[in-house]
Length: 184
Ligand SMILES: Cc1cn([C@H]2C[C@H](O)[C@@H](COP(=O)(O)OP(=O)(O)O[C@H]3O[C@H](C)C(=O)[C@H](O)[C@H]3O)O2)c(=O)[nH]c1=O
Image: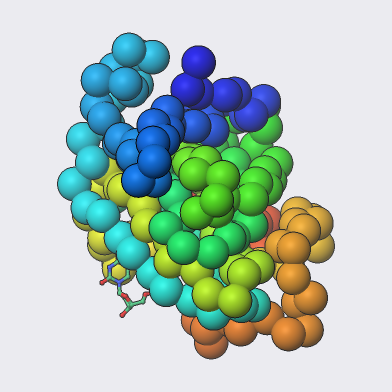
């Protein structure tokens, strides 16, 4: 069973089948049929890749409709604490956060449906993060939630006083103040 539920509707952990031999390993990092067999189908249109050093914290970000994005996130190098927050109005887990370590070593991927804010913190010396999106980047539809919102109590896995955070992310609103914008 390649998909593991998280207790939050639609948010799934995907563990690809790794084939090893004397040369190393091979795995299909994404195969639409594997997802379709589980009733999952996403018109991924954009792949993103970001490189960061230890302590970089990106997020929490989302895009509003009509550019809300499903994301399939994986780590090519290093290790991150990947974090999502359910911002789907009416969801029984609205406002609930979920954290998971994704790494080149564990090869786990996180399938994040539309209606979640997403971020990650790098816990290795460097990390290369790659994720598929089923909607294009649209700056006008971008929104965010401040990483240290006391209502969320997120454990980013790093000492926040050492975190490397963009000026944009340091001025994001709390979930409560951002909620008026949500279109999910
Ligand atoms: C997201 C994005 C950004 N950009 C440009 C905009 C800036 O000139 C530059 C860096 O963007 P930003 O600082 O928003 O990058 P991150 O902080 O990694 O943003 C991402 O952080 C969290 C983890 C996410 O899940 C989102 O995909 C995304 O918001 O790339 C693009 O050209 N295309 C894009 O799809």
